Image (tube, rainbow over all chains, first blue to last red; front, side):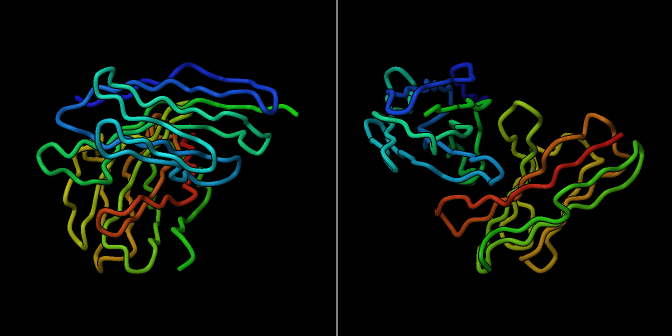
Length: 116
Length: 112
């Protein structure tokens, strides 16, 4: 079945440091890939997405590229801020068999803490 | 509405009791999803509604779990004979066709 594996956390960085959170997946067919973010005290929010190989999703300075050859979707940001402290979830939606677009398989989440 | 709302925000119950968790999706969203998030884990899919019907309930863990959406808007997740292992945050999300999912804040269920 489908699965998503994220790098173990927590990740602690200083402000303006470079961020990478690794994500790899296994899936049937050609999944869509997502990063969701959960800020303290808030619900899950879509951060960015990519729907086909070599697509790059980007938002709020974050980027991730859909790499079919390595089955990866690593999240990157060049300069993190304190306000980026949150839990980040990688997820996929496999449309094999016509399943719903919103039926997502999530990774376990990575806690990011950014210090001033 | 402004967003997906869920009630109650917290629910504490005793083992063996029955609970109902409610979800109000964004107005006009035809698709509604329930997920369960255990501590330190990512959300796990439970059930998906398109309109009033459950289009995919493959994630429901057993027959103690049931969900309804009688008028195609509000949904209720029902858990019978609760067990300590049911303790988790239950998330609801809605979407319009192929748009992104909008998640609610969740209901934290604690079974003592």
